[in-house]
Amino acid sequence: MEIENDLYKAGYRYIACIDEVGRGCLAGDVVACAVIMPPDEIIEWVKDSKKLSHKKREELYDRILDKAIAVGIGQVDSKVIDEINIKESTRMAMKLAVLNLKTKDGRKIVPDYLLIDAENIPLNIPQMSIIKGDDKVYGISCASIIAKVYRDRLCINWGEIYKEYNIGKNKGYGTREHREAIRKFGPSPIHRMTFLKKILKDNK
Image (cartoon, rainbow, N blue to C red; front, top):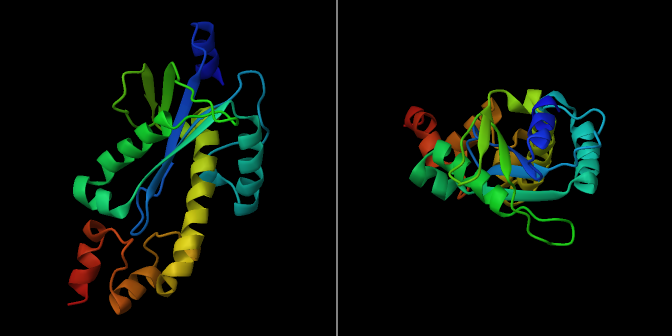
């Protein structure tokens, strides 16, 4: 909380922390979360979502949503990712997450500072990009957990629709099983064609 505390002391009130998930996947949306956490209450066990078990992430997801001042989700689908590339799509998802920040009762919140995991967002709000922010900044860790659980649930839904690829299990990442399914069945409507060039080329 050191960075956040310095910003609170400097007079900032609503500090939004932002992270994304799904950047390296072969299928599905890239998802970002922006979250504003209260300055005076820390949830135990919160850390980078990649370092938590599925069960722990689910438990913390509910606790973070319960304590958060405001939460926003942004997502960009595979079609847009193919059109504008994954970096720009990630920044777009992060921007949407910030613009979608709302309280539990639906009140829109405009943050006055952004702490972002290793990115810059095209918004006219003071911001800081922090390398490995999901490991160093409490609020970004919270955002990483929300984004991860939210996207994992999307993957379960996609897996029910496109059963051949087992997306509910691999979460859209390029596991051997997933790559072999793409070679066998071809890409689905949610696959990122720009990510599949080598796999499809090898199949010819």
